[in-house]
Length: 473
Image (cartoon, rainbow, N blue to C red):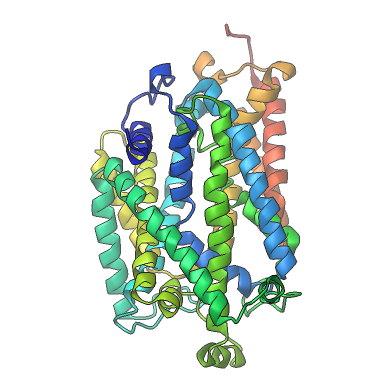
């Protein structure tokens, strides 16, 4: 069986309905090679074309960016390996079924709704990314860094067209999406590498010191952006996928792994996509900033556009346009499909195809508004902050539940459909730390870990108070 077939089988089984409410049997377990290819493809995608340039707009220094990304991404890999993969291979349940056993069906419904809507917004940002590439041949006005609303009729038509195509393809099923992504991922990775090399030539880089001086000691952030330090980069890159690792969303993936060591394969995607690709995309923007057009925009007190389409086109021509379209497509398609699955858990009588169309429609509407892509750093931080604390419930129950004297899988064993210990732990941790972020203007990624820890601790305390009687284990 080829690598692509193995990856496709893993993902298809994940969402096809098999083993959704039972442990994955030993006969269906996959080797680490399956996950290596999957993560390499998933994390070198459309988001990278936006995130890299956005780092430059924050005035970050070379040390803070390069070293901050190095260690922040390492923490993400460690989180996948020692938390997500550890628990995923222990129980071999999907995230939704695992949560249902702890929270109860009604509370999981609330989580599914939040998860689905946030997935749609993320997919919308990727539709925006693809639209910036499609718009290049039409000489379309690109959205500015500060734009929130559609800026032209051409923009609206292109976004609606791309959204419709992506939604229809996603509705055909995940096997089609996975197969296409496996073929497209190497092309996208190659495009990032070529973009980086071409940009280095255009920036007249001949040594490591020349490369380092692209960022140097940093600068003032662009209008509408905040200044990033080492800790901003470190924590943001750690929690960019917080919903997936400390938020436990990837339990659904690692339940197919033979052992927890498969968690190390996430490094392939993280260091290709969240290190090389981010830096390569930043170099594209650095080239553009030297152009007379960008200098004129900066002189007027505005921030030059970070639209990926024109940036890639200026570097590597038509291949850049194709790469950006494919990158947005391969991210938006599975994201829309997963959003549809979350919605289907709420309205199970509606077919997968139709809930996927609904999810795609929401994502397309979101894609009309450039703010989701232009403010992607902030949105991704918010996404992780909202969903990550729910993962703390699973982690703290697994590692500390017995020592604390609480019953695991309480909702399942007691018959409750709404575990108040989970609800209040999340509400209090989210509310307190979101208030701190807003009231004292604290960068959201700074409070993600405290909120996660707080939610886990409160869950143990409230469970100790609210669990009424022991049940058989």
